[in-house]
Image (cartoon, rainbow, N blue to C red; front, side):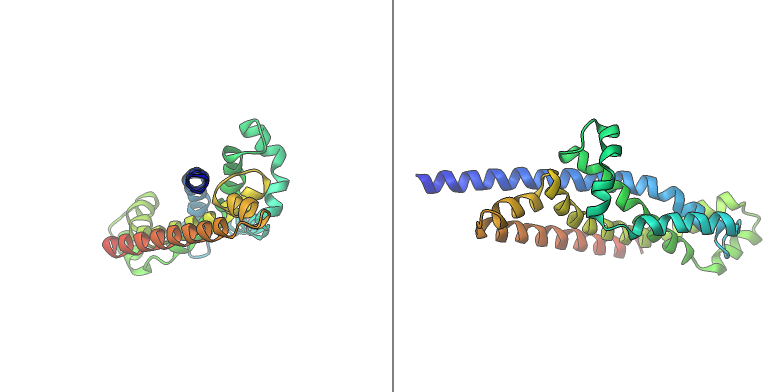
Length: 220
């Protein structure tokens, strides 16, 4: 009877932790994609080969993106505690973890989106110009439309990275699978928790990658 209760308790703990991980990853992905898209557009427009080259804007924004990308997540997590508390009213918890996760992901996805956009075939851009398309039309109908499959691949990479970051968020009360693996599996020497959590994360990452590859092939 005790074994059945223990198994049920373990299942409840792990399922709850999985829901917390999905919650953190979903919202941080959504917010970072939305907020990272704008700097990616500005970087693409103002790049030396962009539609509106502007070295000052490009270099300054590129520097800011690189600075935030260089911060280890665990350090950023601590630095952002006052900002997180200001945004969500607390610095600990699953919802609070979304703030540093999002901020760490914005420069990452912004750079990926910029690279995807700038890989657009110059010949297609010149063809659009020859037909009298405006910069806005070229950005929407050429750059973005041509880059969607590549940007989708970037989002898949982002999700996989955020799964790893969410595990680190568990060390400061963020919850999730990583938190269970550390608290139960490592600190309490319960190897079964550690193994099950690791397997779940591996399966989750594999499923996301397979879905991303399938959608990339469909959209290409």
